[in-house]
Image 1 (cartoon, rainbow, N blue to C red):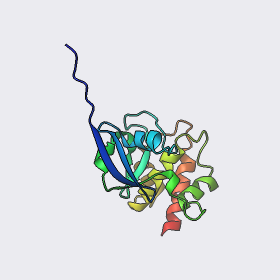
Image 2: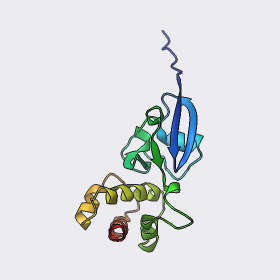
Image 3: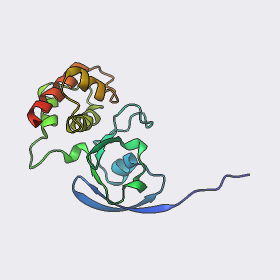
Length: 162
């Protein structure tokens, strides 16, 4: 017996980096795939595709989420911010600048997710000590082990946000 084929399209009105998008997609489409494949915003990386590595971290209504674990269908009338949407008027976001200044990357694959998680971590008030930063950033994996530089960048940006 063949399994039934599921094909249900949904229409989602989502704002990404300040731009409104009316997108029709399969109900099973993840936010990650919507961003990368439909909107061509490739800063958000596909790592494990299971919510374990943090490479796909973005902000939804200001809260950090793993985009691979969120269905696009649930984003109607929501605000999504990706790493491409952080800079304003040609100036890097303080977290982006702190990552550059602290040399908080090696291969760079995890950097967009690390930056987005750092923005969320600071906004949530979890950047008052090195230990707290490491705990609240622990969902983002860096295979190159740039953790000391990443923690330093988050601390630097957190001081600027105050």
